[in-house]
Length: 471
DNA sequence: AATGTGTACAACCGCTCAGTT
DNA sequence: CAACTGAGCGGTTGTACACAT
Image 1: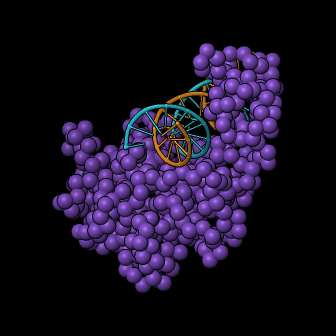
Image 2: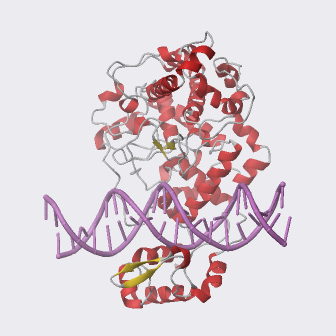
Image 3: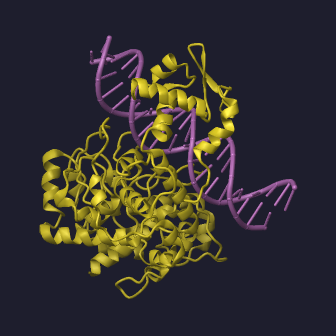
């Protein structure tokens, strides 16, 4: 990264303001003591370092009491962890670190602390900031978050696993493990992960699973796979998480750093395989996940989202609904759904006619495609309601299109996919554009338009579906 | 030179969890 | 077993700087 700002420079500029009132950050009172907020000064740092040397880490609330530092414990801990502790690595991320971050994020989502555990010398905050800025950049240029290699690897590996297992519903081991311990096995299968599987001391303990794997699993198993009951939330461990330390031994193909991705024609490759990979946040209770529409925060859906600052009408990306907690595995299997290609075909031909199980009031308890269809229908219905008048006059005889306006608003993304040749010999864009009214003026589209993410995911999903079906 | 915009970073906030009482 | 407290995590915000206009 090119930012030349350093904490040191900031601190030096603030040195003269040692123990001031914290500038614009103000301060808070703690038992009569005004706790300072805002940037730390080098003098404060020295106090904190001295304190930690004497007393060790932890008991941060005691720092203020014993050292006279007018900072709250949380602030002290953060300062120590992010800036003062030894062995911190400063400076730009290396390409290898970038690659790791991308892979890790594809696998575990916004688990910054977990990522940091696998990037020695890096802090969760640093990684988080890096990722968020990366997201914004990619969002602007309309690129998917993950390199196509990752997505393709996931697809291929999943295919291999399927073949090896011989179980139509998915990986046999996975099933057994899932049923025995109630955990969801992250069967993400990036090369680097896979090549080290035999060496891993790590047994996947986090319920997080890349939604890409779920997607692929869903495709492969024709939605007979399932997400088992999961604990309410994975307990946080106080120890450094070694769960993915095997990344350090990664032998995966090199993933170009972001800058290269964006600058040397890699973008073109991206556009040719814009299959989203889905990290997964496992908290089904607090997040109240709704399929694609409510509370997304992860790097899904073609990367076109904001990791923060949800805007009006824009979804805050989280995860597909199939990652919700369920009490019965059967609910994920029953009722059986038609083969995915049928559903896809049905959707393309007549989205609103895709049958949804009558006992499926929402996509929460059903498969990914159901969620998609449900969401598409919901989106269409809501938009139908809001723009019924204009739509009734503007819709063509293709009454089938779920949501004209939503499709319109996604036409740039269509163009993203348009060049991607599908196994059909047609580009996915051409397939989808048949039911996609174009923007009349060809103008760029607002990123905040509701439904765009849903649709971009749908596009990628359909791409995958076609690919898998015909393969 | 002034202004606007984008980027990177530091730090805060709210929430959750684990341990203790 | 509930209440409390400390700690950690992820999301968000504020700010300084770089660059473009």
